Image (spheres, one colour):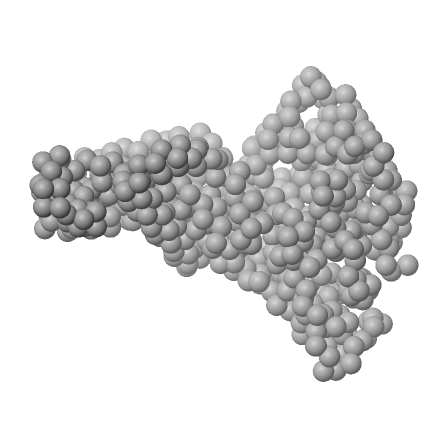
Length: 311
Length: 250
């Protein structure tokens, strides 16, 4: 059973975030997730459950998403004050007129990738045999990047991915798109032995689970980002409380699946730069990729698309 | 004996399914037995989800019916309005609901609103065409008689056109009720984040988690829901038409 989570429980944790005077009216924030409540949002849940948001003056309502969740559109239309997206999605939507700014990446390294069977010996995208059929979101930036990078046009067949791992499980030559926070653990839980080929290893690495706020940034933005960071730090130190809340809110998660995802996503969260960091070089790299793919107009820049409010 | 035909067809279908399932892994095609056990395992969840989907489908059907009645009457009363709007009603029917659903999420937010809207969208057109045909199929001698008595449009509508249109209305409802369930489930695929839980949402989640047997059980529940609502409409039709109209007897 999934419920809209209204989570703003008080706690005595000292996270170092700016505290507001008791009795001050809390700022209500609707945070739209781009997927169901799963560990990829652990820090946001911990932010609410651990009192990090409340101490910074926020009452956060977490709105779970699902496939194709239009989070930035919800932000743009005023139905949410904060939204989760990815760096590539944010840049594309900004070019279409949606006013949003990326302020905090939960994932340093993109959780996207490809999934193959370990038995095939495939270790990189370059090892995928010519003529393979790849189940992937056709037309997505990641698919276009792969086809352009490896010159797969006419060499590989892209077929739409419906989110089901059934055909992957029964065909050892199957290749499909995957998120480190989902398919690899589902396949393992069904007895499969998959190998995950990170998007980063193909040169594609937009920040994932990126917190976006309205453009221009509201006054409360720095305090909200600070509380979010505190939530993620606390989640990495002890994910139990948030995981339990997500288990309650997501009827498809099992404790085993949860543990698998928590372990698998850890290195993707912190990356090389550290939790919550954003660099000009990375944003420019994503922007340049999208321009090269024709998904952003020539001359696009990321100058106003993101703001590091933490460092 | 004839009453046994559907049962025989169902048994043959189940036997064929069982045989076919032996050739595939359960993750691709589970057997009827596996689906039954999976359905039993999530029965409580399935029942709650069926309730929410039924609520969305019936609300959507109600909205669709209300709009269809309004426009059908307006079309009969004002011919120019029919000429102006009918083509757009046809266009509305051709819109791919699955493509509109994400837009509905932006406009209405997650939840029942989206599935009610998609249910209303898909059942509106068949209801409108049935009602419009019914309201314009009144025997000409009846119309002439009312005109002879200088009857108002309202009197002619309430006492002549609507009674004659009732069999057409129920024909529209029979197809509309099934379409409303399909519309609601499609809306839930995209527009539900699990709150409230619904058949479309649960089916999508179960299939994505490779719990195929449970997904099948939920799909069957959707079919049973549509069948139940269809039978309720049939029952209503018999009750209403047998006392009011000779068409109901058949």
